[in-house]
Structures are given as C-alpha cells and as structure tokens.
Image 1 (tube, one colour):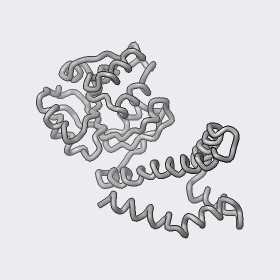
Image 2: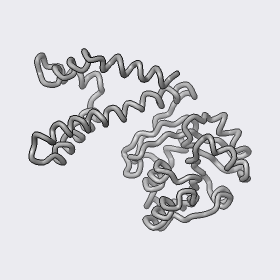
Image 3: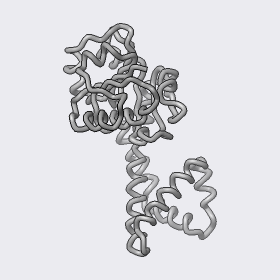
Image 4: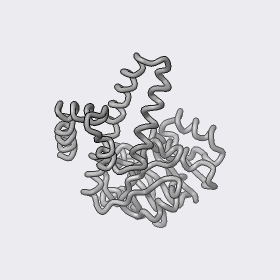
Length: 241
C-alpha cells in the first residue's frame, strides 16, 4: 500500500519500522529530522516528503501529532476525499478526527506500543479494524473497541505497563546485587513474566502461583497488605477522572 506518516515521534517511528520489508511505499514527514533521516537510511521503501505530498500520494495516512498542535498544522493542508486517515493522537476520538481531516475519511484511532517495531504487539483500535488488520496483522494483534468510552478505559488500564516494568526493574536490581551476572538476572525475570502472562490468564496465573507458604504467595500477600491492589485501583480511578 501507499502509506504516509505525519509526525515521526517514537511511536510513529516504531510503526514505520514494523512495516519494513512488506512491499509498502512509505512517505514520512521531517518534523523530527533525526528520526526521519534514520528511518530513510534503514529502509529503502521510506522517503521524506512534505506534508501535502504525503496526503496527495497515500492511500492511508497516519497522524502522529500532539493533539494540541494538530489543528493548526492540519488546517493548512488539503485532504483528498478518498484518503483514509488513522490517528495515533491520544485524547482524540473518531468524531474529533473527522473534523480535522474532512473531507478525507477518519478511518480509525489506533494506539500502538513501541514493540510494534518488531511485531507480536497489541494494538488498541477504534473504528475500521479490518483496515488495520490488513496492514498490521498477523504480525500484530488488533484489539477492536466499541466506542470512545471503551477506548478511554483501555488507555487507563494499559498504564499498568509502567508499574509492572518498575517492579521488574526493582526486582532485577535487588537480584543483581546477589548474583554473578546481573544482566542475566534481569533477562530471566523479563522472560519469566512475559511468557507466563502470554500463556495464562492473569487470574489463573495468580491461582497457579498460590501454593500455600510458597515464595509467590508470600510476596503477593505482603504487597497486598501494604496496599498494592487498593493503590492500583485508586490510581486507575484518578486517570479515568
């Protein structure tokens, strides 16, 4: 497909890298010159173009702009009626996107993660999931959402990723002071967590690790008594509000 990217931040750059080698013709903006130059040097199918050229020569354009700056940038452009637009902009639903890109079609709001650069990544999406599956599946999994309220709930819940990473980093640091190879220790923990949760539902995994008096049960109960669950729920509630 002929794909365009307006904005080449961390997430947009990861998406471009994830599409490499699949026969697409990709045009990107130069808003982040260092990142856009790196993408062009890595992938022969990628070229830098001005914003209007991206719109005029693409079938699907991805918007990776900040929502507060997008209206001013996009108002200076002319969107072709047959163009399909997908937004990475957190905080913008399909209705808002439609007003920014008319008369082009606001196809979807998509929230990818940096792991999309190498595949096997989760993608939250509102709108035309068939189009997104055409572009990103089967290397990645698109999770279709019902409406803007559901997208907001997913955006709040996905923030658990950072605390999980923090816990893993802290455990790896603790382990690193007690073993001969700290890097191996962290790699072990990352693999243990990712494969365990990848193969088993979260509640089922908790139950499987609930051996009375076992290490996992004792640490979990210690952290629950310290308020781990209540603090998480309170934090998610604050995000939602």
